[in-house]
Image: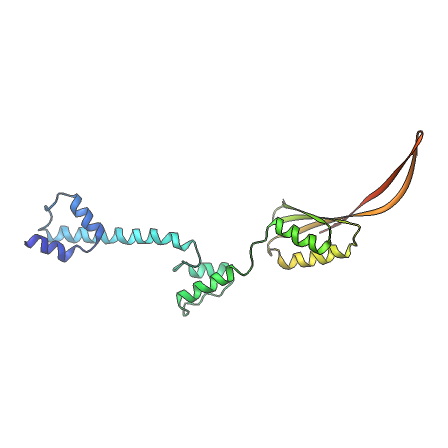
Length: 194
């Protein structure tokens, strides 16, 4: 039949075919202009659907295509369009797994290993600033400096550090009060650094 041949010749878009079947079936089968309008509109809808479906992939560097230059800048790679897309995606994956994210718990664990004492990290004490409290027991303050050097090497560059150290000195003072004698054995000394 002539109409179906014309439809098969013009309509290639799945969306145009659905739209043509939703509108009165067979009514526009003989209209060359109506069929081309349906096809062009269908192609636009197909392109839009492909773009929207592709947007989900752009969120991930290893699936990204048109957003690759953006991801490369985020990870500090110079965008180069001459390199094939799969190689660029592989470079992003390698860069992403290079350094795991640093969170307060990881900072505390690393610094306690260096200092030998307990460490507390408090985030957001000021804009882009975190606070580190070293409770070093009776260990020397030199560990504090070594720990800060290590922390500066791994922390994100946009963050600032405030720190203080608590060193407990063994001091034996006898306090006479009333009818008894009490002993005071610890004294807390705070060293503040920014």
